Structure formats: structure tokens, C-alpha cells
Amino acid sequence: MQPFRYHVLVCDQRKPDGMPCCNGRNAACVIDALRKEIAVRGLVDQVQVTVTGSLGLCERGPNWVVYPEGTWYSGVTPADVPEIVTEHFEHGRPVARLIHTDVEAVKSEITNNRNRRVAALKARDSAGVLPDEFNELVRGYQPSRIVLSAIELDVFSAIEGLSQSATASSVAQSTECDVRGIETLLNALAALNFLSKTAGVYTNSPLAKRYLVAGAPDDARQSLKHNLSLWSTWSALTDSVRTGGCIARQDMGRRGEDWTVPFIAAMHRNAATRAPLVVRTVGTEGVRRVLDVGGGSGAYSIAFAEQSSDIMVDVFDLASVVPIAEAHIAKAGLSDRVRTRVGDLRKDTFGTGYDIVLLSAICHMLGPDENRDLLRRAFDALAPGGRVVIQDHVMAPDGTAPRAGALFAVNMLVGTPSGGTFTKEQYERWLLAAGFTTVERVPLPGPNDLVIGSKS
Image 1 (tube, one colour):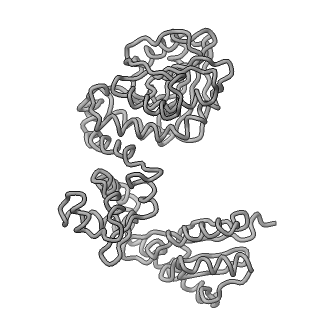
Image 2: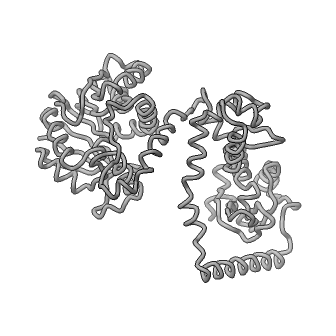
Image 3: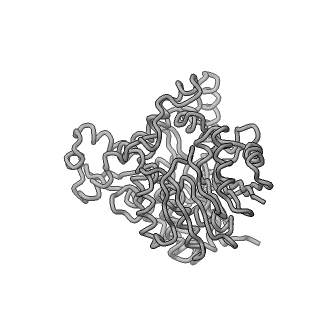
């Protein structure tokens, strides 16, 4: 028995420039069109689409294979997709003009392409040529910087505002940039599929329209600008490795809006969907008072208050952050139950009588001694039976996994005096030393888990 009526294997293999491949022949747009058409026709439970590596007919792409028949399509364009879905997937009639009928010729072409590829790989290996994947990794900063500069200059908003007259000259004028400079950037963005270019006019891709244009429903420009701050600190990684800490440290409370606003926006965007999951996992039965230490935008505090009308929450953060939290709280209509308190989590006391003290994405900013002190103050703030809830990267004992946590530890090396990512065993030692009687790790989807300490 087949779980789906049809299973479509669609090639999106990308090869170095100059080599024929499906990705270079607009396969991504074809795949997007196919998935949308299947969804519109209500066929998602009947047709499974799987993106694959090379199918071997590189000069003829984009290529598909449709099972169970094993029908091979080549040269498929977005315009062909509705016909294939209608004729083949709805009526069982494959579209003959796009099908290979000479099986032996297809097999011979695939075999010849594979043999040439294997021979080329052997020759490159014998000559000591660096693998393409390694070169791409080393040069990964290039597309990243191109996109970040475009966001910094608000290029995508300018293009959207200019509509069908977004030439290099008009975009340069709108963004107050040099024409040569902006045209070079725009062409690179088009090569990266953030823009398309027709007869000298640029238009935004669907992704850019959704996330990178001012006023878009999912406008993410402000949160993405936090990467501009990270760009600067990561540039000093070599010196940070030599010295064991960040090179130019400035306390968060003294950083200007150019750093604080994008940082909190990035944290809020990350928390928007994750906060309800954390609250449901922790549970709110018997919870009346919550302290959200370093609560940032207040996303987790809002989620607690929305889960139960009996809960009062205090967001504890710096004076530069509290106004941002208050704006989000007011927008959620929860100013009567979610309050703010100005303080420094590194040294201030937190009060008493809380049922939950939340430390979400806090411990990684601090070193071991600072975390011991933080958890002692969290213990003092809890009522009997209360819990401290840590959400953070929780590392394997050797510190090399999960991958996201190992990379994030580097971010803490370049950005903090002593921060890092820690193991469950480290958290357990700190919590027990602070007075907590039980410690539990709760895995969650995504890069972070929970570590919960309970006070008897």
C-alpha cells in the first residue's frame, strides 16, 4: 500500500557557476509553484513532493520523477505546473510533451553524466583542489554582508515604493547612494534571488516582500539589524580567542538605541512563537506571581498572563529596555497584570514570594561564578514550592553538541567577558548549591531546553 497516490522527486541540485544544473534553471521557482498548486487543488494528502540532489539529466532541467509509474519529466517551467497537476495528478494522464520516452537514452545520458562527474571529482582530489562546500563555507560572509547592507540601507522598501520604476538610478536616489554602488548591490541581490531584474527594473522576491519591506505584515528588518552589531563583535574573534574574552565590552545599559532596539526586537521575534510553548510546558497551576528576569520585550511575561487571568508578572530589566517592554505589554492589553521593574540582574535583589522565576536566555550571558550568584538570588526570591525556570542552550558533557549551542558559545566569547553555553551537569551543580532540592531537564523543540529547579 502506498501512503500517497503520487511521490514526486524534484531536483534542485546546485553546482558551481558555469556547470548545468536544475537550480541554475529556475528549479526553486518550479518547486514553489508545484507546492502551491498542490495545496490549492487540495491534493496535499495525495501528492508528496521531495526535493533531491541530481537526477543526472543536468542539461535538461528542471527534472522530476513521478512515482509509482516512474515518469521522468524534464524542462519543466512554472507555467507547466498547473497542466501537470491537472492532467497527471488529477486525471492520471501524464503530460507527454515533457516526458522522456526513450528509456535507454535517458539511462545512457545519466550514466555518462555520472561518469564525467566522478572523473572530475577524482581529478580535483588528485590536484588537491579545495571542496566546493568548504569554499562556500569560508566565503559565507559575502552573501550575509550583502543582505545586511541592503537591510541597513532599506533597499527593499525603496524598491517596493518605486514599484515598476525601480531602476538602479531611482533606487540610488531614493536611498541616497552612489549609482555604481547600488547597482552592484542590486545585481548581487538578484543573483541571490532576493530580487528579480527585467529590462533594468528590479522587483522584490516574495520573501523580500514579506519580511524586508517597511510596513509588511511580517516586517523583520528591525530584528535582523541586530546582526549588524554581531558583525562588529565577530570580526574580533581572533583577538577574543587570544585573550579569552570580548575586546571592546560595553555594558548593555550604556549601549545606545542603535544596539538596544534591534537586539530586543530580535529577542521578541524569537519569543513570539516560543513563549506559549514554554508556558504550557512549565504549567500555571497554582502559579500566582512570576518574575521574568531580564524579560526584554515582555513576550514571556505576556504569555504567562494570557495563559491564566490569576497570574501577576513582573518584568525585571534595565532602564533602557523597560520602555520597550511597556509598549508591548500595553499593546497586549495587559498593563494591569504585567508590570515592569528597573534593575540590574547581575547584582540586584529580586524581592520575595514568587512562584516562578524565569531566566530565559540569561545564563549564557554570565560566567559560572555570576550564574551561581544569580541562582542564589533567584532562590531567595521564590516562595516555598517555587521553581526557577532556565531556558537556554544545554550542552552535551563535552561541549560540542548541539551544534547551535557550540556556535553560540563563540558569540558569547566575542560579546561578553565570561559568558558561554553550559551543560546540564553544570546547571545542576549550581542549582543544588543555591539550595534547590530537585533539578529537571525538559527537552523542547529547537535549540534551547528547560532546566527547572524546585525549592522545597
